[in-house]
Amino acid sequence: MAHIINLPTFGDDRGSLTIIEKVLPFEIKRLYYIYGADSKRGGHRHKTTTQALITLNGSCEIFINNGKTTETILLDSPEKCLILDKDDWHTMDKFTEGSVLLVLASHYYDVDDYIDEEY
Image 1 (spheres, rainbow, N blue to C red):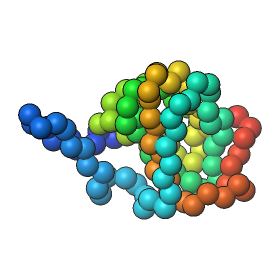
Image 2: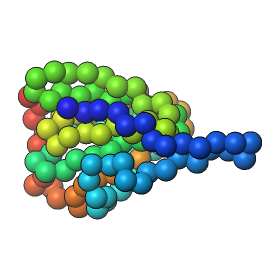
Image 3: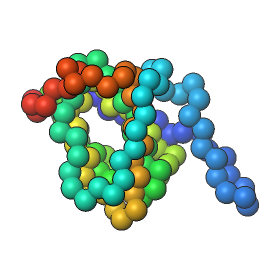
Image 4: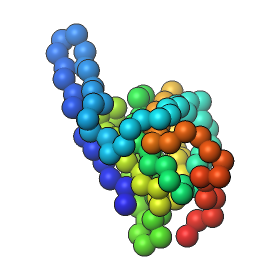
């Protein structure tokens, strides 16, 4: 099931620095970011890909269904990293103005890796 990792963050009067190093349960093969979103995104799960989601700016809600339980998680800080397992059917919604959602993936894009049907 999906879970949150709190990323190591350091701050002082110059600002904050958040590090993603040796905390993800996979090697990063692909990254992309979603911005300017004004409607629901996602609506799938994967056969093999695990993902890590981080809001770099703003916030959004992630709805997750793993076939046994459902939950909605608010991503509203660049210190929070949501790990989505391959079996987590998910949507991203309720993006705030100016939000940027970074996605780190364990595999390269493959159209055959996507399962669109919800449980």
